[in-house]
Length: 155
Ligand code: HEC
Image (tube, rainbow, N blue to C red):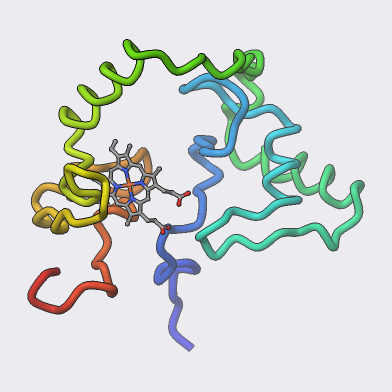
């Protein structure tokens, strides 16, 4: 059998533990995650990805796994994770907040997919536009992936 990189065909790709950059965190951007964050990821899995829930493992097994995977990056030895962000209560909607939201809706071009009246009448923007939506790992976000719900000429 020839060697194939595991996860090569998965979208999104499996997390590269050597970089120690994690999406599912309670800590600020740029910070390592807390052990509790990694624990929750193992328990919950990652929705809309190939990563399953490892709920069937015992608590001790999950704790042991976290101790082990942290060893793939020197960052966990050299840095401490920052404190978890505290999430304040949801702000009350006001006429001003609605006006600000309308402004962001226009600026972020939400209507290109959701339509100006929010009735999902927008056409999918061209690939060149969605290709600008990137995350830390992958130049292609879900928004930039081919949309199988559209007819071939709309893709
Ligand atoms: C590139 C196209 C695209 C853009 C741009 C876009 N959306 Fe979406 N949005 C979608 C799609 C597709 C879904 C449906 C996802 C699904 O069903 O899983 C969705 C779903 C949603 C949902 C519903 C999620 C749910 O729980 O059902 C909300 C709310 C939303 N978008 C808000 C926004 C806002 C606000 C913006 C602008 C900042 C925005 N979207 C920009 C494509 C887009």
